[in-house]
Length: 606
Image 1 (cartoon, one colour):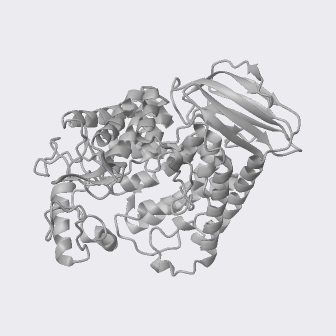
Image 2 (cartoon, rainbow, N blue to C red):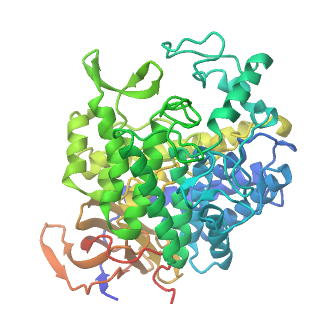
């Protein structure tokens, strides 16, 4: 393994001191959150009864950031807590009846995609864990046809048989109990159907009162007749769960399932004039249960969120396929839908808007284009074409430089990528310090909410604990790994770099070491490594790609005066860096991307 050495003490930069302070403070704050929110067995201190379909994902989401934090350098107790909480929450929701055989019984992938990245991070954290392997293959088996108790997959038609799926197989009929908790919330959404009483097909703001018994009875009937039988694009988010099994095993069956399923949706797009239909019936026909309409399906073009539930799953599936094959054309399903929406743009108040929804009256709900997916696409592909898309749709980057004041609040693990992208382009010079300051303030607000929380556990909503979580590692992920981070709804953590503590033989930066990736491209990553400890040396391994999918081909040490010293690196996914006490080094590591089979193996697994 190539070996790089840095010796000689120098004053640690402010950003490095701030980064290490936040790592330590966040690790301490985690204890406060866990002590406040969980019982001795790890279960959440909340309602003793839970019957809604929704909510199971929120239990996991409360702690999803823990294994992510561990991956960038959180202390060992973070990993211990992360595993304990996964097991405890699983047992808790099994007692509620919404989880069976360790997996959600039957729910949509908008919600499942928010919770299951938890286990992807756990597997990156501990590649040799046998329980993780068993869980990965068991869960994937529910989707590729291996599990007779969960017949979700129609192999002949290449479709998942219902938008509601899980350990009990496809769920074709929903009940009052499933929806009851969220009926008041859904009353504030666009009505799910245009032919409900009082409806106007041309009214984009049409609402109905879900709490009205007569209205709800009609909604429930239509949902079960039109929406729950057949496939929807949202199910593409299940591809990351199957890819997760591939990363554990290398079994080509998992890879092929992802490619086949993604291709099936590309074929449906091509058969529908370039637009991905949002509903496919049990026979595989577009609009089979919707009177031939390609719109109006469950989590489709119209309800409840519109375009997002088409484009995001398409990206998740495409990025998984690209990771496993190195073929970036698998991202085309997502690209094509963004391009279609852009061709439908219109100007309002001098600004281009794109439609978010489609109904019987055509396209509506025009909004500002969302840069999230454009940035994620460009990051994965590093192609001139995807960067050109950003230039065309977002010629003015001034709005990218700001940071949300509530960074990490509500759902730790969501990483807005705009400010990071601008930094990677060479702008936004204050980003590293600003994002660390915002992270600290978000952590502090969460601690204050914990201290003020005297609520009755039996009244706590399913979202209650997410806002109390002070473990908000988003800034650390973006700064240290050179990535916009994983797409929250089901994305895998793809990055240019991943660090390992060579002495402790675990992922994450060693104690006292700070990192800042200053630029990434199609063929290199430039990172600064700082040992803030003036007394002890540190040794770390740098991996090319979160899953070892890239390979280093060379590099240079960039000296403070700008001169460069070449590094002799034999092609491979790892380099060792020795940092003497108080030492720091700037490395430009050349690489080829997507050349190795991706896996969770890490540097030491044989």
